Length: 323
Image 1 (cartoon, one colour):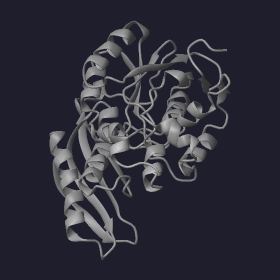
Image 2 (spheres, one colour):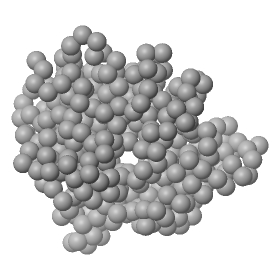
Image 3 (cartoon, helix red, strand yellow):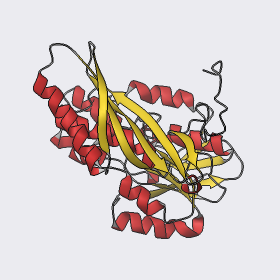
């Protein structure tokens, strides 16, 4: 993709080549548009839940950049023989989640396709002075993660019939949960960088933060919370194709593990849907920010790493202080 031209309009505060979570366009000194789009095939069986998850996932990019969603446009591709009530339930799930965020569905577009896909194009606003990005991480920052990981592994197991939706209820509830309240808590502290954990997995998104910020990141795999039954399903071969791609993407990462930690490290590459926020927080603020997250919207929030001034772009260790 390096052959594509980069936009240079002075009003554009983000770069497509930098890996930012959303596009940001300056309207005035205190207001900028934040725009993002995402869509994918069903990862759960229930149409309404799928719609909710997809909407929460799409709006997550807005929250990762410190913005507020305003409008959403539906994007729907479906086989012509699909029952109308299934389509209605998907769209209703998306509608309800968008309204929960205080935004509105302004329309959308549908096409016929062999495979069902649903998503949204979301527009929000942000004060440029309060905008967060992936390029602001600073040496000494503590890395806070607001949701567990493992949705890709569990969704793969669901498709294989090794688990049902009740068996991954904690993951489904998490995917449905908006990142709005987590972003609200984090905004009260000294943030360096912020991103949401989605398709590149935790390791991949942290690697992007490290590259954009031109620093070194250290991830403590043993401190990262996992959803229930993730390691069990992974041991049964439920790794995703995206897991291998994400590992290849971060091929120059240094992995330092103790014996038996390999499967937990594999989870760091698992592609997430509607994952949590990953934020680098100034060390003096980290404990208070983590305590507020845990007491409020994110009981599973954890400190999962640290930012270093120099070293490999990404080092994955079993735990704190492991060498």
